[in-house]
Image 1 (tube, helix red, strand yellow):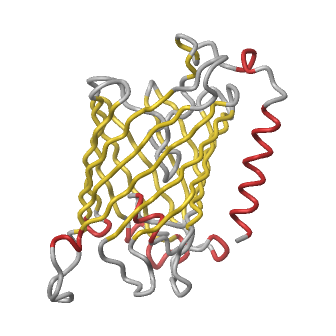
Image 2 (cartoon, rainbow, N blue to C red):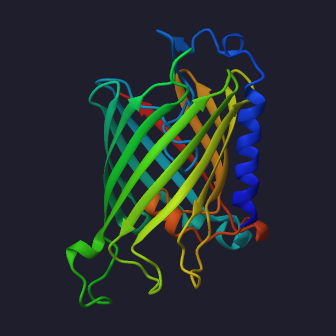
Image 3 (tube, one colour):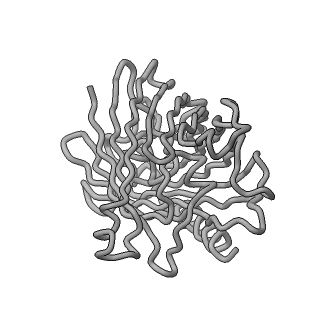
Length: 284
């Protein structure tokens, strides 16, 4: 429980400290359009959690996400290289405020569709937050009927609903809160409820014109007492290159879809059981 308490205190202190600054003097000249704050986050994800950034209207973005195996095993798995998983995610902007996506991950051979839509934007001298909703539907095709003779198609399904609430505090600091509901029709732990809840905390701090450090954490609220899984804690760096963002990160979760990293993170930062990964994006 110490991680959530520390993060809540840190999150609150950062917001209180930021109120001492004059927001107008801190915002970049290119970060306010029609009095709306923009570029709170440069990537579509902070690290694991979705950010409030959306793809522009009629723009198609391909995100190639790669996460190696645990570095704990050292040279036995070449620091995770032998156990890597990949996720390909296409995101299209129906409008500037509505995105749809489709992805395939080699982790549990998951196919996923999603919709992400902005409800309200942070505005200078107006509403203080940007609020975005995110919903997804996944199909786990790795489940084998030979091992689960009563398996039906509906058992492969999972769902996610999130509300993403972000605030661009100043030109360097952005914060996000992400209340999350997710449901898996099939869970591996008998005592685990199929419907699960968590609160995500995330933030981005700009280090230089091109570099930023990102962090996010998922506080699972109803994990079964006998569950071996952990709360996901991830730290990464964003590098802006010619309008594109290259993300590098470390996490104790190898899965990259929401149900996976919130419900099935197996790593432990305290013993070095963590995964290195990166995201590459390409706009068409």
